Image 1 (tube, rainbow, N blue to C red):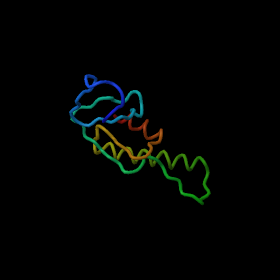
Image 2 (tube, rainbow, N blue to C red):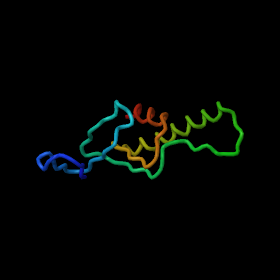
Image 3 (cartoon, rainbow, N blue to C red):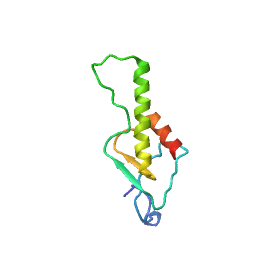
Image 4 (cartoon, rainbow, N blue to C red):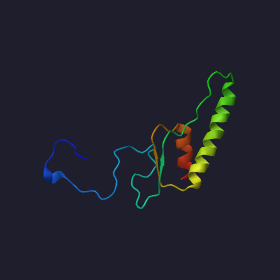
Amino acid sequence: KVIPGGTVGDSAYMSGVVFHRNVAHKRMARSVSDARIMILNGGVEYTRTENRIASLDTLLEQEERYMEILVTKIFKLRPDVLIVSRSVCRKAQELLLRAN
């Protein structure tokens, strides 16, 4: 990757893959060697069905249960790094951090 500015002496070779992205939570690892990587084409979030009337409590319970099931399935594959193309809801981040 080329970053404007600096001199040739400021350059460095990095063996491997470098992502310019922040971790989702400050307690998550910032460096991982020999990582098992999972790439998801989509987000880790609950998609609400439109045009259905339901109470807020029911929706929250469904969302929480769905996130627990999804994170359990992800955790069973034991990835060290999870790369997601869309967003990860806060509840899923907390569950992933706890499962770590």
